[in-house]
Length: 369
Image 1: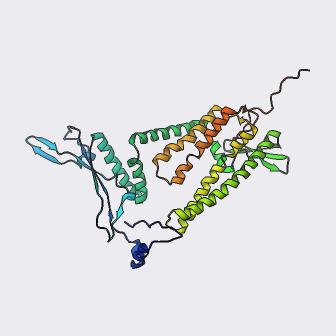
Image 2: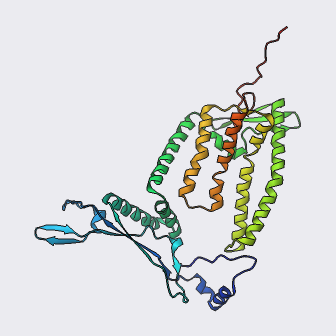
Image 3: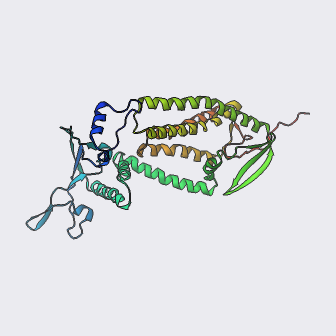
């Protein structure tokens, strides 16, 4: 296979040895495939004393069976299965001219009939992906989901994913699932649009149809807007230096394949940082107003479930470390929100992030006179 380009320090460049070897090779040789070494060989032998029906042997196991005739009875030798799924592309070692020794780890283990058939089917499924146009790298990522993850945890993940689909369907029926779309389309569905200084336009969603309502700012809405702007200003003072400093630090201490790779990585980290920034103003508004907006229990359950569902997939899907850490942004914000919900009273007069107020007018105590 074509070897991966080596990562280098973009400021110092390649070492002298790497530079000399690169100069000796023609330009066309850099893209030619070279031999690689698999450092691990996994052997599995079926340990179950299982008697098969000779007229209906399972096709998946039959190709691994070696038959011998002993009198009138046909026996099969111990079934040997060479695990190809455990051989990942990232573990391959390039064989060059200076290589004199290479490591090899041979592992031997027994396997049950059910587990054997499961791994045979999974191995065939992964290799059939390349016949449908998947690249070797994509097939290797799918392979890693089954190899690098505990089977019980993987089964739990599939169960959680199925439950999540069911929950989304039920939420759709209760007009909950549109909230996330509204936040992504217009930033915040209840973000008020100021016309001159006193007017506002609020967008309400009835299914897929938007409704516009014009009115004036109340005192509570004016304070909320003021604190929201104030929070964004303070957080931006912290965010911009962190993004620039992180990009400079990675340039000095982390190796990349090219300048383009460093630039993309810096922009992606900035996007993650901005995403975290836009989650924090609501917490600042709650702190300044010393209250939290009312949220129905259905919406609260939906937010809680969607907050932690990404954490499960963050452990089984191969992804960069920065993206894995970004999956836990919602967790931090949600835990702080839970603390504020316990600390501060619930104000039904406040408009929540979904544009809903459950008490239009404040409840006043009766006049004593």
